[in-house]
Image (cartoon, rainbow, N blue to C red; front, top):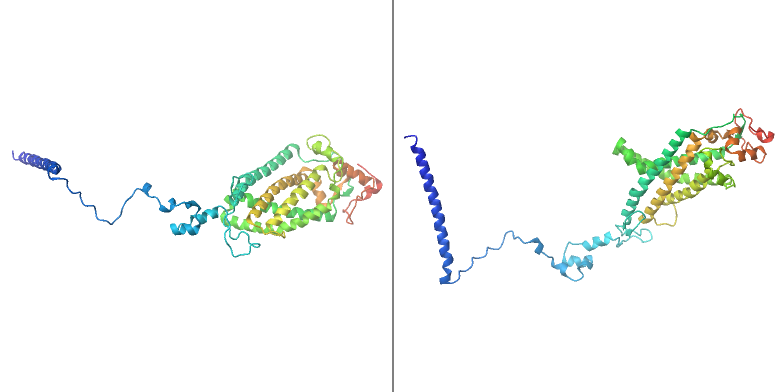
Length: 411
């Protein structure tokens, strides 16, 4: 019995507490009911006093409307007018900046026409959506010039590699005679090599600047890549004018022998004999070499040189605004991609693609058999004495240069 009494007492106390709580709630409800019925006899009860002002006040954000925006012509206000109604709100100024509006600048207009212009006006370049000129240039460069230029160079290299491994180098059918013909004089070779070296430096530096971040940056890291591109950009800018001079010498030096002849069309229609069949007849330079001369050196080279000199700010009479520089860059990059693709084919034929072609430019001489098979019309004029076999004072060691022109010998 002594062990059961504490449990009974605990239950009893819990019941008493629960009854007291329930009773208090019932009493409070009754009192509230009496208060609500009382006004019917004594009149309305005065409302409770409003809370004292002060502290943090809340309001629905959708109900907040700036009064200034309701004024007529709010969106057409100038920056000064906006500062009066909404101090600190200079949206009109930045709207004009985004639209390319030129502001005031104390610099002379003829020296700095864009000094008061932060964002260029809206344009629509080919291949880009209508936006400000700087963004449009970026779209053309990143969406067209870079990917399609890389694809052009890659396809060109791939086609040359496939042709080389399936066809091999173009060789001679007959035996060499040992008698040499001077194909290029020392001056011609010096002109060609100076132009070739300048072009190679420009091509390598341009490729690294355009595509280096895709294939070189992940390998050498940002610090080294930054120094490398800075050095190559400097080389590019200084070698460019040298390339201009050597290109002029190339055009003048080889102009006469690159004039069109009646057999050039036949050579082109037969593809130069590269895809089977006998090589068509040609004079000193065939139609393929003339395409490189007229299309690559004269047309594309002229576009590359003109736009490059403009980008170097070496042409007189221009102010060189951002818009002009952007257009010049797009022209320069596009023409350069086509020029490099064309010169790659020329380099292939002059090195791996044809036996004896590289030694002709390195040493200046070719064998009679080489001249007879690859440039028969040129060989016939030499054999007939119309063109001397030795045009310079320098003679190859251990050869009977010039004898063919006098003897009329042939293979």
